[in-house]
Image (cartoon, rainbow, N blue to C red):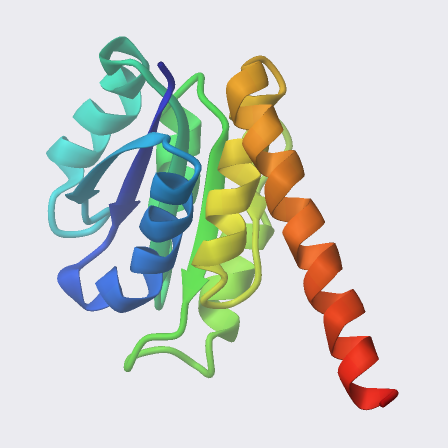
Length: 161
């Protein structure tokens, strides 16, 4: 069974990152959650990035605010796909610093980047990556997407009464 590693720079990022945890658990995907600060625990960052794949992790979701070096640094160390979640934090410049830090990666070190505070989409993207090779997860994603479609159809019916 695939597992997604969810890391964030500090506990203050948890309210945003909980959305990724919830969506993945809804797809019955195991998650491993940890605090890994690129600036305050660089040794832990290096260990995590180099060894996550040895613990059965298939995709890493990394959330960070401010300078937001965590996703890029993990991507530079890991062979796994990394999804970055820019977090609008109290020391942020309206979140733009986080978005650009994660989005503007150099060639050879990709980080898939979702919207500011977009942890839910990060969870869905991680599930889709896993679903590309796991039919059980793929089937759950198909059901989820059908649910989104039905919600829109029902909403349209409500306004056209």
